[in-house]
Image (cartoon, rainbow, N blue to C red):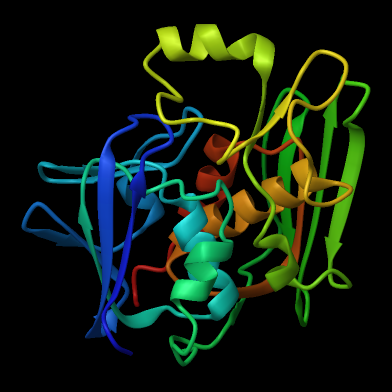
Length: 256
């Protein structure tokens, strides 16, 4: 592939960031501040509103949308991702620009491996279940007590994983001030997030069930942290980055 350069700002830091893709032998790795590291669940240090990786002095926030694009493309090796900045750019809040940037890369990596058995992680009303199956499938459901969201579900298949890519991160207008006071969403805008008022939309959705499609996208990005693809039936209800990563830790394969 010819050199691809992506520039933007981080969702949470608001800081400028640049990403460059370089062909490289071996598993997919990030290169940040002179440190190379694989995106693995064992390197996750924070899961509040995003997935954050760290290795030595290097710390990289909000990796999930880029990793989801890698998962959808089937790229597990042959790529070095150079990042300048503390956070992967949020771009339009989805994975579609990352998917386009990876266009032309040949899917490569270890073959999908059967799940070692049934696995479940849960917290309160949230749960992630993985069961052995001959093919990969994903069912994600959410519930928000909001008149424009409520209960939503997506199943892949029949929905293709690639169709999830345009679904944007979403949030609620009444939470903005509190989140920014915590140092979060400094780079958020109506250009990179679907925003809800208490009764409706602030901007226009891209698809009928954009929130649950985005949650499915987040899950794929976090599942990438297992380090290899798996065959199985994955069921996520009211998931979170923390639960997704807990499952990925159980699946992380130290032999590859």
